[in-house]
Length: 289
Image 1 (cartoon, one colour):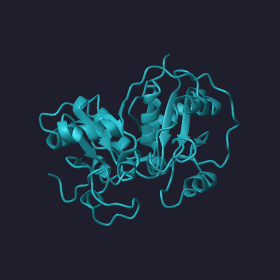
Image 2 (spheres, helix red, strand yellow):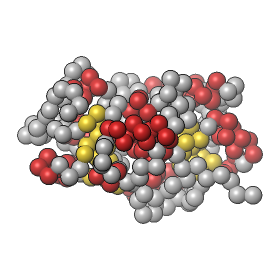
Image 3 (cartoon, rainbow, N blue to C red):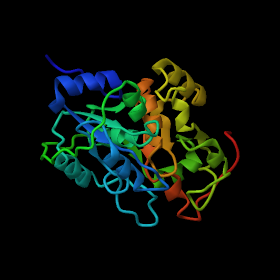
Image 4 (spheres, rainbow, N blue to C red):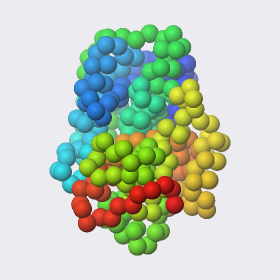
């Protein structure tokens, strides 16, 4: 009997059932991270994680080398990421489930990256570690042995734009940029991570946490579609560029739009941290236009 194919979200109950019935059919990845303490996620993983889960580090595994001009979490080289995932045991077509304890903000990065590599059998654990524990399911401290997988890249299922395209768009405004950062950082207030506060001129703000309900799970597809449509009236997803501070939480908005059935938005991977690395690029402040 074929297994269910999860491409956006999976519940704790469905993941537990899958891991119990066919443990080899799913690769579970712990993506916990803290921007202000890069060791925190790995430490938390060692203290307890979903049984059989492997840990992937945002800086080491899910980002490329920094040059000082390409942002805090540049997209990794595709071939290098494929090799990393295969080394961790990912097989072609295998179901992947990513989770964190931060509302899906880091798990969504792996979800997006796998789709960028042409792998659509990837989902985020809805509600994250908290939902797993609330359901009474166990944690483990065992680290699974490394096994070589057969994963290879295919045609991308996600679109990217580079900084040059975003600069050109300042003049054409053919694309609408959506900034996933907190509202105050978008306005240029309380900036504690990047050296310059504000946003890309013309960008609108959709704080990624607005994709979640009070229980930490994603809002319904209907609600997400209504909210994104209100933010982007008359704008098709193909004319949307998603960004944030460094190309991480923008993936949360990408996932939310996918849940809503709004396919085709592009990611500006360098995001704000790349944008402000060149002082000649303009900066705007204040609330949504």
